[in-house]
View (cartoon, rainbow, N blue to C red):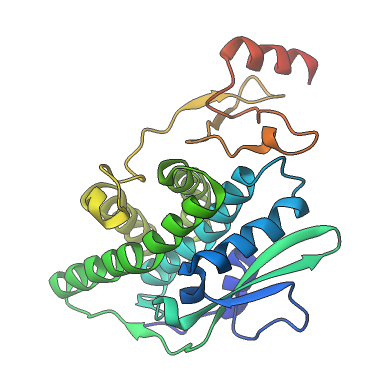
Length: 260
């Protein structure tokens, strides 16, 4: 088991070990299951992103929670350990950085839980860590966001796969050891293909999606991933459909390439 590099988790996923000095809001993660608390969070965050209603605040916050999920994935695959991912071990902070509202996730107990060395035992441990995190931590939070923001749980979960695929490619390319690359791929394959939809409160595992590619906006020789779900940026002041939004027609995408 390797030591957890919290500086790396902070840079990539806004995971911290110390509370902020002046957050706009700060809740224990379990407190966000109380409807008034989640409603306060969503209603406070919505104007910070110039949301025309609360739905984009819901999708944006779900995407931020994707960072917590990615941190969990990374620690298991790269450092072969896990943090305590229960709701009680995390504080969710909303704070301002310049003109932007951001979230940070404060880890209370930072002692890592090591994976077994035996492959079969590790596979069982991995399943328990994934299932516990998604079923008991992220699923209740997504359901609370859904109720407070007016989004379906499906569109909230749909914010995660695109971000996962982007970061996992970066992580795999950054690792030098083939064993580490293989571990990342195998662990994500288990997450996206082996866990059932029940672990997420859905009929289907939200990570079990086909990656679709579109021509790069400016370089016709490159391909970029299409988003799995709309992030609702178009429902913020001055916002439009993103170039990689699945709701954008291909003719509209082609027109944007001409204008780029």
